[in-house]
Length: 127
Image (cartoon, rainbow, N blue to C red; front, side, top):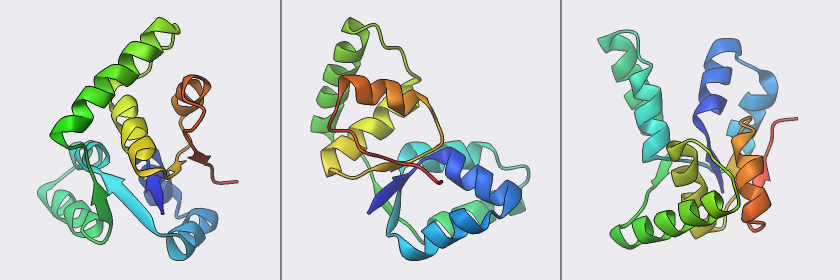
């Protein structure tokens, strides 16, 4: 299983890249609440919003539990102590990936910064 970042969907919807399509076909792809919210936020109409909602319903969704928020706070603290600043949504996605021991499928370079502090974080890039 891989956890898809928001940019993967946007890139695919903007270019219908065959490489991305083949990964969607061959991998077990999951999303999380942050990705859902970011994609829905970008909807340009009610019809588009409904279409995105329908598409995302096909993916398993992994999210944080109440206890995981403590771990997220710990992760953010460790990142800050190492001088690493990343967007809050990326820290959430990384915490979910670490919790589930799965790679993040992304094109976002922030995750490489997180990985420098949390070496167990796995990244999956479209090549």
